[in-house]
Image (cartoon, rainbow, N blue to C red):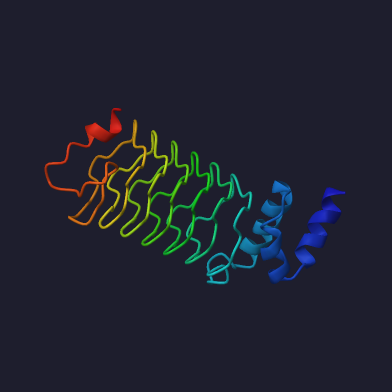
Amino acid sequence: MHLIRNFITHLQSTEKLIKQLNSANLDDALSALEVLKERQVLHDGTLRNIDISGANLSTATFAKSALERVNLSNAQLINTYFYEAQLHQACLMGADLTGANLRAAQMQGVSLVGAILKNANLARVDLSQADLQQANLQQANLWQTNLTGANLEGANLTGATVTGVVCNQHTILPDGSLWSADVDWSAYTHQ
């Protein structure tokens, strides 16, 4: 039965496979993703501007994928791998990215309002101009993350690693104040 389902999945059109990413069945969504990878769709820009909000793609791999302006709001992306993915202006509002690896992803202008990023790896991620209001960043790794112009108002940074973060005078801190060179990050990470 499994072999037949895999065979049928391989015969489907790219458009149908993209729709299948929104499947309520995680196995079906991940099977579709694997075929899309084989077709090089993750890297050629086909997934730009698509709406897969609410998708369950936990444990999926999107390394080096072109996902600009994709709508993944309220998606389940637990332990998903986004290494060096292009997520410029993507919508991840309310998404659950617990344990996700976003290392070195390009996420300029992304919306992560209310997203769960507990234990996520955001090392060297470009989050410039990102909206992280009310995001849960507990225990997240933000080592050398670019937060220039980002909005962190209401974000929970308890236990987060913020060593080497890059900010500017337009970065809004969790308490609503603007960043300055004398900011004591421990006021936000040790609550």
